[in-house]
Each structure stands twice: as structure tokens, then as C-alpha cells.
Image (cartoon, helix red, strand yellow):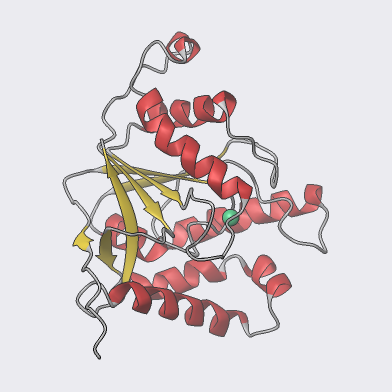
Length: 247
Ligand SMILES: [Zn+2]
């Protein structure tokens, strides 16, 4: 018996100029979508990163006050590899980010500052698919980002933002969720793939604490496996997959 062919992913929309990626931790974008981001910045699009935390609870052998500064540096370096020079940190506490109006307000403010048409975030669902449990930070930030895309356009939800000079921005047309178990769209990883590997490698302290494998082999292996898996549903070419929510 032959397996039914999985449904093919649609190409990501390309009618946009500015994207804002909002995630919980340093490395969240490098593990998922930096190959896509490299392609976009090559094509002249602007992409900025906003991170809810500095990832200070991410390395067991390093206390948070040391770790936060190190991971912030690594994140800025890894963003630069894929053409991203604006990286902001919202200062929430790693591991215990709370979903709620404070987080929605911070993300809505970031959306108003950057005025993107495309917002990118990471899987907001309980699992990565099956029984692979997601972390509470990813769930909180992903969900708050989907919500904040609407909040950013409404003058009356967080009126204090307009008082600070951040006028409503109702121009977000899509929120693209990376790492979703139910993707709908994809971007060919193509020439962005090498830079995605180098971008992940910039998180060297984190990777060295995580695995005994050679960091370069580890980064290349991860990127190859994940982009080939998405590519099976995108014409057989390595790809980065997203679940796209239109607005
Ligand atoms: Zn993370």
C-alpha cells in the first residue's frame, strides 16, 4: 500500500517590505527560520528581532547574571549573519514569562515601533506535534504575539502606548508561526541555508553546553534534517515551513 501524498505547502506571500520576529529566547529563530530570514534580507526586505528574554536561564552551568549578557551578545552576532541589525530585548524573565496583558502590551508596542506587514513567531501550541511538549515561554510569547498583532491596531486597548507617541499600526497582514506541527506555507531554504548554519553556530556557548557533538556538525545536522523534512512537502527542495495566520 502506498502512503497518501502529504498536502503540499503554499509559497509564503511576498507582498511585504518589513517583518518583525518576536520570540521568547536567543536561538529560537536560529533553530527555525533563519534560512528564510537570510533570503528575505538578501532580497532587500527589512527584518527586526524582538526577544522577550535574554535567555539567562538557558545554560545550567552559568548563573543568570553572567548568562544573560553572553547570550545577548551571541544573539546579536547570529542576527547579523542573516542581515538583521535591529535586535531588542523586552526584559521578561527567562522560564517564567507570563501570558497576559503586560506581555501583549510590550509586543503591541514593538509592533507599533517597527510597523511590519509580516510578524513571525514560534510555535504557540502545547506540543511540537505528538507528545513532544513545548515550553511555557514559547506558548506565552507565540500566543501573545498572535494577539498583539490585533492589539497594535486598536487605539483603545492600550491607550498609554499612543500617549507615549506609539500610534496604532493596523498594517500586520500575516502572522507566520515557525515550528508548527501543522504548517501551511514555506520558503525555499536554498542559498540561505549556509548562513542559517553559521547563524546557529553563533550560539556557541549554548550549543557547547547542550551537546558533546562538534558544534558545526551539530548545527549543520539540525538544519539539514529540519529543512529536508519541510522540503518533502515543498517540491523536494529544503525549506522553512510556517503556519500562516492572515488578518
Ligand atoms: Zn526557546
